[in-house]
Image 1: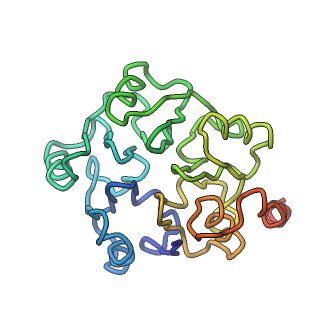
Image 2: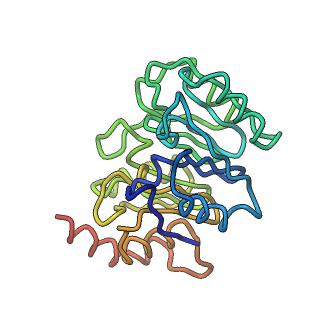
Length: 246
């Protein structure tokens, strides 16, 4: 199920929240409406945790996680870390990471099995990713952008990439990740697909500016509608989307 939502008139939902198959994090200080959208969709299946990281609300850009674990930057306070530890399911590992590229959500994109990372990520961080999140790590750029967490988003079902990703690159990434991928946009033409949405294997939240065409591409590639057209069948939609942006 795909839902449109805003955080205080901001469409960049992926900046202020983090969603996995085991938990959801939402930034503190948002409107009650923002929380209620998440809780009505998710509360029966996974915990919705109100949190901040290093006193900031941009938790979606600072943290990275999947159903196995959650990594937060070194600037996270002890109090915040304790709150997260108390709120997360017992099966989820939590670790603070010493990393110069401290906006982990911008430089790492992952599902429950594979992670794409910024080419300059520390070797120690790569090992922590493998241990805590249980993923295979690939250093990669998306359409020439090293901030892979900002320009792509994928689950165990499928994924979306920067709209200018070439078909060769889509095929290469698709074989790396072993999920179908499409190039597309979010929030009426925004290239920041990672920052514009949060998604897990059964639900998706994006900004209210997202068009019906963008939404149908998202629902198809993330398999959110049983029997929806698969990505290669939504070619005409994607073409229309790219044409409208160029």
